[in-house]
Image 1 (cartoon, rainbow, N blue to C red):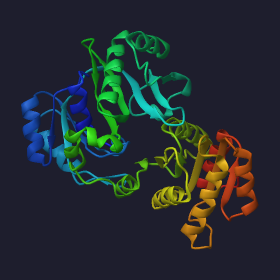
Image 2 (image 1 turned 90 degrees about the horizontal axis):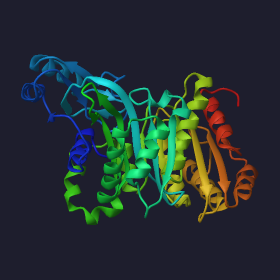
Image 3 (image 1 turned 120 degrees about the horizontal axis):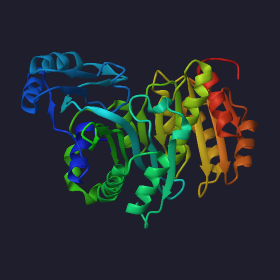
Amino acid sequence: MDLFEHQAHDLFALHDIPTGRRRVALTPAEAAAAAAAIGGKVVIKAQVKTGGRGKAGGVRLASSPDEAAHAAERILGMDIHGHTVHSVLVTDASEIVAEYYVALLLDRAAGGFLALLSGAGGMDIESAPPELLVRAPLDIDGGLTDGLALSLCADAGLPSEVAPVLTALWRLLRAEDATLVEINPLALLADGTIRALDGKITLDDNASFRHPQHAGLAAAAPADPREAAAARKHLNYVKLDGSVGVIGNGAGLVMSTLDVVAAAGEAHGGVTPANFLDIGGGASARVMADSLEIVLADPDVTAVLVNVFGGITACDAVADGILQAYWQLTDGGGPLRAPLIVRMDGNNAEKGRRMLVAAALPGVLTAETMDGAATLAAAMARQEAP
């Protein structure tokens, strides 16, 4: 279950991660009242479970309650990448000196967790140089200690004041059974303090029986229909604003695939990923059919990249699932609405690729490397010759 930003801030505060003063508003009048209560300049932020709010006009600065009401009036009801804005977060404006990116997430493929840190946070994090992003696997038992947090901050060029935020994020991740906790930006303010200015949290629905307090979070506002459909099928799907649908097994692998697609897309007119979809440990025909159906239901998707690392589920079984899913979705015909590029590695990868090549399904292509698959997907998304 993905949380809204204001819900993430509430959990941040519960676990001693510094946030600003804030209130949620459903109407312009409520936004004005919130601005008056907070005082000074405030930021009005659309509450939708997708990125790119700022570039879409869903984040506005206000210097008075009247300006806050006007900003909320313009934001409420907006459609941001297929998400309708039903509420706004009113929070105090911050005097920012520097912005950072920090995240902890479940990496199913590795059987552990992954820490991501960058000294280039904010709206343009996806276009930041890859070398600025520090990745570190985290052992489930060992966790994120104070010493490791300080070491990671040093590697990423972040001030030592960020280390306590990292360890607090780890405690939140484990205590709330989250699969993703992200702060972007984590800001250094003019007074020398560190503050989480935005946040994303994904909770593991499989652990909901341990957290009855989470039940109210799901009913806070309508969800994106594709994300709701994915949740019903136990798939981890997040809508993005690009044109290449991405499906993989393991959050770390999918995150890496998003980065590689974005990098490859720069040479093809700025093509970017259309979604994050983690199928988890299985890749049966039913799982693949459900995943492809959800991704292809997005009209923005013009190519789909399936990136799978074979482990317990071997790549030939994945290939069989893709073949069966293809026939299910096309009723024995073809091709799919958009070209499908498949990259496999790991257990029985060569056999899986041979199965797909031998089937010769229209619009289904294979690639041996992640970079090659991403380049092919970006070209196909732009309807260019591979």
